[in-house]
Image (cartoon, rainbow, N blue to C red; front, side):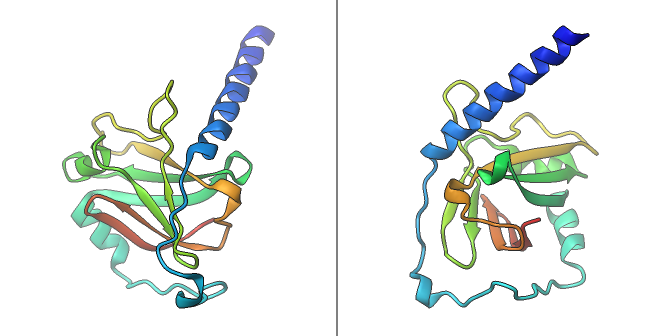
Length: 163
């Protein structure tokens, strides 16, 4: 039993090292100058009452959360697939996910380490399964409470608050 626990620790340590190396390869592209962007820090994001219903009907997914992970160097998006046919475009390997930090305009990508490939699910989706996607967060730019937008092809989530 001790050997199995030790192997799990080694795997976690290797993944952490891999993710840390991937963060260095991420890009930050300022979309607009900082003075042109309204300050949204501390602002309450208001969503239409049926926004989540629309996302479930249109895309067949329910976004569970977006939060910091890997000591803040990564952002983890978790979502549940309700309708695999509608959610299929989110799993297309050719479509590159993009996270935009609303207050700075910085654009963050999903890293693609050479040994593991993109840090996202790309196998065909299954009903009632939860899937993940990691975005690089170099310099821990995006903090809990910040507002971001996520785009994956035509799929878009606006005003998502980081946990």
